[in-house]
Length: 585
Ligand SMILES: [Zn+2]
Picture 1 (cartoon, helix red, strand yellow):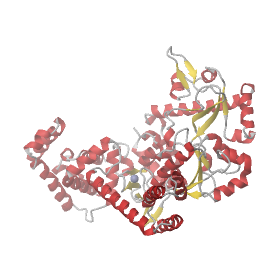
Picture 2: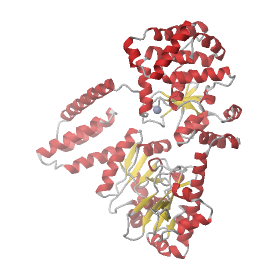
Picture 3: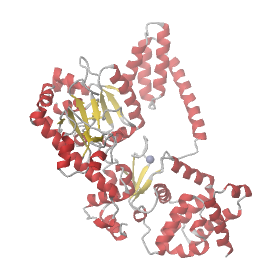
Picture 4: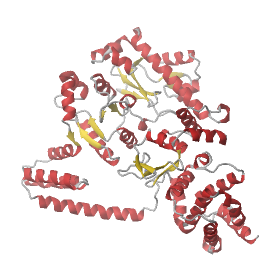
């Protein structure tokens, strides 16, 4: 267990505003701060930071907590790791023996293995065993300098040169398998996963080597092979070269299709290029990008697959509120080839003149139909209206509508009518969906279930939350509260968890500030508590108010119908009986 005193020290030495602003762009709003929530997709900010309570809460998805909960979520860490990271950021030493950190230890070992592996592969590339791979890179136009900067490597074409090397460095077999770069044969021996490949190390924002991509040299096997997910790496949450691009002075980021393109673009002097890791863009990656820029330039290959991927990416970016520009690459199949043929200056011009996402989409559907025929024109206009119906800005819509109507020789009013009818249909469908949708949380099934619990017992849940709010503000009311009401009488599961911990800690004279609670509360409970604190519904938080809410809560036990009692699960029934007893005594 982590001592309270340590958490107090840690709390005193960091400010939630400083920590969160490293991830989210925040603007001041009165005494609080607001930004776009990093945990769900949104275009207007509902993610609030409360410096006074050192907590955060999102009114969109219900995520909330303190600095530690924030780091846990955004960095995908467990509690001990988040405390460690926070301590590191604040420069406070962690009392080492006080934490259970087997998970953290495995991660640390995996990172050591990765670093050693990257070093080994790079050494191979620049030595005799890698000379073909080195020549291949040079022939593709890479310079020795960029090879060093990206730490490129070569995995020798045999089954155990890495395994042997790591063993000689004292790493254990289980650690090597967990790191994902060695596999285990049916007979139990170890083998190298990357063989005869050029290696691209993937480095996270903290400078750790977290994974590897490998490109085949010959025709054997898949062209690209990537690390699978490990304790330190999730493919869907990382981007290649973001460690460099985040420091770029360019006002935007360039998203290219593969490692080689990214390296070529960096080599040409554009240090703002990134790529996904052998998979198509995920929403998580788009959200990461949104933290660094509000405009992305998509520079995918000019072939059909690249264009289809561009279309997908446009949709994902519009979900997270990132403006998209599409780079059209004439007379070359990808940025790498274009740079080789025409050089950086021409590429710069290309970047400046790239079309926006809407123009790209319009050109695409125009290519789909033959607009010189009446049929083709009708089909095109149908798709076109659907496209424009997505655009929120009426001015922007008007510009493209007028332009296209003129080009095709149709009345703008006809297109407008179609757009209106599409928008109306969507609005109805949305209203229907919202009516049927009873959950506010986007989270997992468990949190949805807990949320249902709150909805079903809304009257009591609200009373419970007021009680929690009053007790948080007035810890000295706790003895008075406990005399009248046992924490087990709370109706909803999440609030019961909160009030139980609250009472326990106050009775043990321990702190009940949000920062101190996040160690012992479940994620759902922390979300709820932050919500309660963020809403601050009660003006007058006195004892009379407290008694009134307790009275409301007490109604619950009396009002249970036979049917309700029959539906109770055994735990719930026991609690019910206990609450009846508590009332009688
Ligand atoms: Zn949110």
